Length: 264
View 1 (cartoon, rainbow, N blue to C red):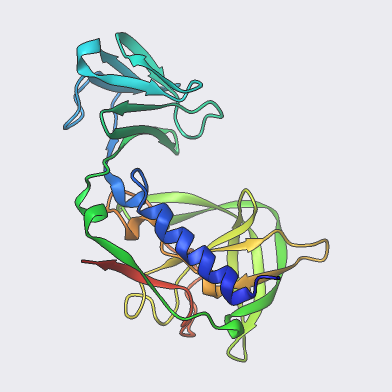
View 2 (view 1 turned 60 degrees about the vertical axis):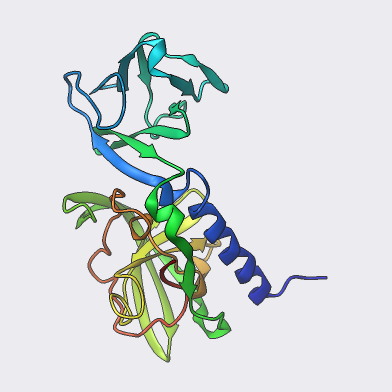
């Protein structure tokens, strides 16, 4: 029996809630610690931490209890100095300290260490993601027009800093009887965008993300706003999500997709 669009959306929605509330999901993030070139402490963690061109450096002793996880599986406790390669490296590393998961990241040449704690208050208080009911009229055809070359647009981020957002083209579509365009980026599976609309900051979070399937040879794809989803920074303050680029704030009220986080 073929799954309906509404059933597929419900499975996607259930999967979203499960992913963000997983033991080391987005709700578990308790800190993003930007590292300096000189060894120093990270609050709440043993050992000395610093950054260099290759990633995160750690100096620890076995009694600290930090173990590497990422080179083919869990390893023994760190004794001495080790390198943890960041998430932008194909051979990225991670480490554990008890139930904590420690993830090196790189953003625009800067290195940080993220700490995920299953006992994070936000994860313990999570009661789901509020969303609009599925409505087929919010899934519309779209046409993608690429730029001649990708463009780095500098946009504000949730942490108060500005960073480049690489965009690759625009999609054109019609909703509520009006034509619109959005600037989008390439993703691993198609296209992605950062959007806001007339519900943002009122009925929904201040902005949302959206993914689109890879366009066909004529640029045709589908914009399903039922799958507009909350950015990571809606779940934890320590994410550095980009705000919508110029032109991606729609005047129409997009009453579709995820709204906000529910708490107990």
